[in-house]
Image 1: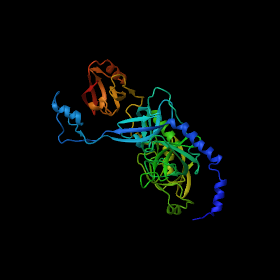
Image 2: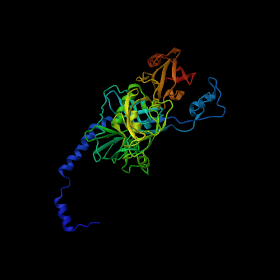
Image 3: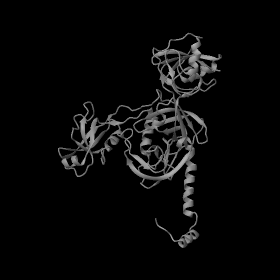
Image 4: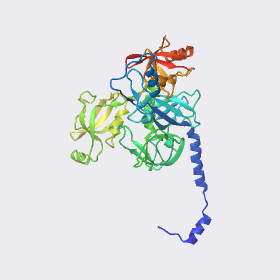
Length: 461
């Protein structure tokens, strides 16, 4: 420990100002940035119904008025052998950010995956139901949408490729469910491979505090542009230890463009198995460095059959040198399927360039509603608490609000409503119109579930 003489320390206390003008100005920059971007950062709350505990042999269909019907209604079982809910619904929270005034919100796939209902809370605490436009598990990026009826505040993307290690960044999100939380730090590293999800992301590492609930929130540069989406932390304890990871905005924006277009993500595919070039492989092939990737297998039904061979070393793809073995999947994935690209390879110790037509990887839309068009909310009185989207032969239930009349009646996400009060349904608007015209205290719905038609009575009182 270094000791400072008391006299010197006293002089330092007298001459050193409590806050330099530079530091004060810097603090105002953070405050101004937070004030500007925070209205576009949202809290996301999801709920997933508890799994059903099966009952041996199922339960018989019970006649109208049977006393056990009331028992099932009260305690979660549904007549017809569907069993009982064995626990309370599971709930989770996360963050997101609005990137268009129409209500498109970006978050993590893992925040909304398998959710039965999704709510988005703005910074002023107004809440809206959200629907999933599309989600990509491989990059952990999801696109959801809310209908607010007014233009929403939004943020824009910045250049994540231009970020420099040591550059200041700010993270905003719903840490531990506390609401809008702002933390600052620097870019600690770029191009991190943290081995979660697919091979398509090189993460930004930051020491800006990222905690539970921050998932899906934005990472801003000092111009207030989104340069990343906070996704994961490294932590032995579960809390922030100063090592957080964000998906770069260059990847997020590209995935969102795909999801917004048709709810799915298209990726290029060349049909080869690869492994990194090790020191031993480089030495054996007289390569000057461990760059590139060696082909271990060629798919019998892939686009590389008859063009690439086992043992070829790919040195560059479409003009992009392979610095690391994992570069190839990312380069291929973001190449337009059907395009012919140059591939530089080492074969029989000689370099050559071949041309390869990129195929299409099987679409990866792990959590996409059946209809991509903007759902219609059946919100006219009476409100059943469901969100609907167009479907062939009816209206598909996209989400069911917890505690609603529809949830109490046993309506589930994925059900297709084909009739309301004996009125055939061909669209979400038909459901809304039929509910408005209903005069009884309850209405009978015919739904299609798993290829079966079911009737459900829903209270309107």
